Length: 152
Image 1: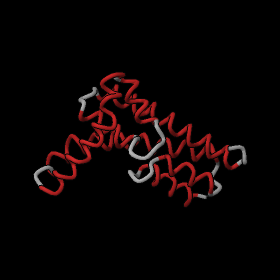
Image 2: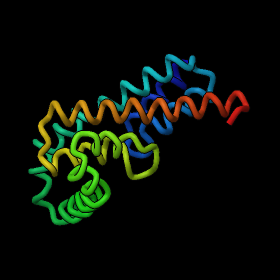
Image 3: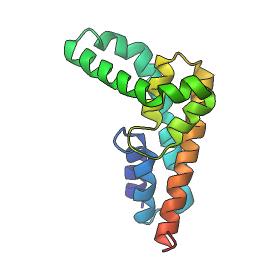
Image 4: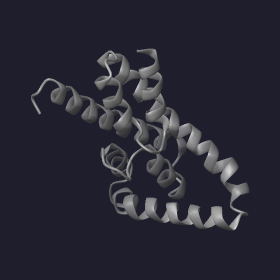
């Protein structure tokens, strides 16, 4: 059980799945449904401060490398295009909605990049990302639970 919880945590902090993968993984491997929700939610929320630190301090040094710069510009454009209209039109709630959508290409990584690009105040951006992560995790948790019970 501990090993499955650690793997669920790692999925939830990874950009390849976030809690959208971590929660179902843990639940389907027999981890307590409330424990897996809490751990995966915490792991996913932890991404925001880590990404902000990376973007403010490490990203600037890496931009000197041509390959990294090309990749960073590509990712920045994707995040700006995917979230730009919602954030410009709805502000805080637009960012919450963008992070909340439990589909590929949205989530805390893209939300963190969008927050950085649109220069949203750290506290407001953290709150929007945390609320979006919570709602997304709740949707995934509920859907997984209903599926496991044979209802969905």
